[in-house]
Image (cartoon, rainbow, N blue to C red; front, side):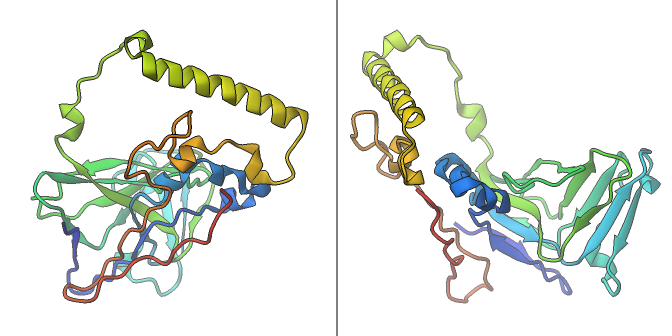
Length: 260
């Protein structure tokens, strides 16, 4: 399947497969957040659109379109700079690409997972990109007045990934007692006992190696008895990079190994 980004003349969107690494995770003691596989996979679960310019913005606390002051770096082209067009403390980026997905597929559009920015938060949308001949905007809403926010050129401003339009509505959510699945209940109770014993052991005597301070069942894709789970279990994602039509396929450079 193709995820197409149509570029109008003059548009030069900078889009990359999202890396799994985050500065705050790198800075944590022994980089322990990387031990959480769901975090790693979410971080890399799409593509990031990067800022085409350095820019600062400040919200003065009012809700009109003049409530957000935008100050791009000198020499920034007008179509590269974000704007204030909606009011409501919102800073808006015009994304320089018209995306097209296969029939029945939307694009989830929002901020990069597990990236944080003080005083401003990304808004999230789901766009029917299989038919709409329109672009979309990426919007950030201020959460604090009179706090200047800076976006650096090359900083992620938007995160996208495809989702099937009807998939979420096709599910039938139900509650069941775990007694209905004795094997699952037994696995859960075994895992829970082992986890409690392991945590007590680690608390009593800290292992020298950071990787020995967690059990790794989920990371390795095995159940409580060590048997393999899903055959297509993922510990890393390798998304392809956008390329001109007809050019050789390209992949993102692999992230440096993190502690497992």
